[in-house]
Image (cartoon, rainbow, N blue to C red):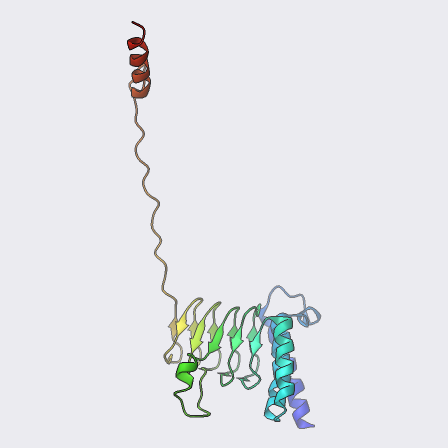
Length: 212
C-alpha cells in the first residue's frame, strides 16, 4: 500500500511541475496531455516492472511510449522526482543513466554511452551512462556521453557536448559561431552631369565608325 501511495505522490509531483514550468498550459487538465509528462509517467511504470524483473513488460511499455511520445528512456534508467521534460522530441536516456531531482530536460537531449567499442572494454555491469545531479538544466540538443557525473545546479547549454565530469554549479556552453559582417559593397561609379557612361560612349563611337 505504501509503495502505491508513493507512486501516486510522485505522479502528482510530476503533474504539478509541468503546470509550474510550462506557461503554455492552462491548468492541470491540459497538462495531462503534455508529451513529456506522458513519457515520464510511462517510464515510472516501466522502471518498476524492470526492477521487478518483468523486463519483457518493461520493454513493451517503453516501446509504446517511444512511439507515442518520441522520448526513449530505457526502463533501467533512474529518474528522480519532479523531472520536467519539455517538448520531449528525440530525448534519449540510456540504461544506466541516473537523473536527480528537479532536473529540466529540453528536446533532443541525449544521456548516452560513448559507444559499443568503449562499453565492451568495461567490466560487466559497469556504468556506461551519465549521472546528472539535482536542479540541472539540460538545454536543447545537449549531449552527455559516458559514465560522467554532472554536479548539482549545473547548466548544460544548447548544443553542448559533455564527455568529462562537470563540477557543481558549472556552466557549459557550445562553441559560439563567429558572426561575420556583410561585405562592403563596391562604391558606385559616378559621372559628371550630362556625361554619358563609358559603355554608352563606346556604343556611340561604334555607331559613328560604321556610318562612313
